Image 1 (cartoon, helix red, strand yellow):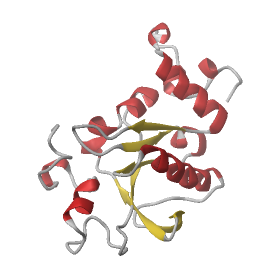
Image 2 (cartoon, helix red, strand yellow; image 1 turned 180 degrees about the vertical axis):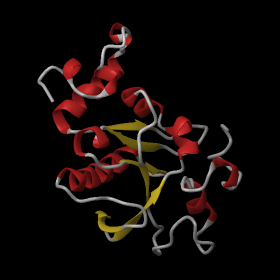
Image 3 (spheres, helix red, strand yellow; image 1 turned 45 degrees about the vertical axis):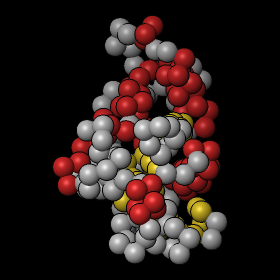
Image 4 (cartoon, rainbow, N blue to C red; image 1 turned 90 degrees about the vertical axis):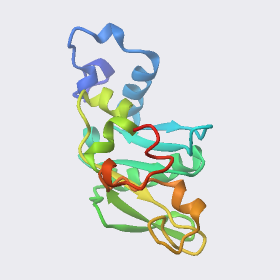
Length: 182
């Protein structure tokens, strides 16, 4: 990668004749990827539903999967995604089915492969960066206070609804807040 963010290898930076159309957010993403290796996009909780955050640039810079997390404070998810991003930067291969005990204090997180059917719904800024859907994306799932994940029938309803099950195709996902926009 060069010092000029417009000369980097990411596809957003490639001149398709629309470079002048890049907005401040796009340029910030490019600069963060250039400086830090990735960017974390944060979508705060609102009246529609819980917040979420996801990385942009891990695949570009480190060859690892992009990461997404849902249902917690966006700043907390930003820190957790950075913790996992640092593992990727250090050469650790993150993959579907892995458990990581050192991301949420006192809890482990589970990584799940996101079905491509969800990419346009949740990862638009990453698609804009790469000019195609990024491959792959892993959902970082976190447990409740008792260590149960949101797919566990014993978890309370609020926890089950706080995170989507993005490893399922959208047509197979339980109807609820995460499918309302579909």
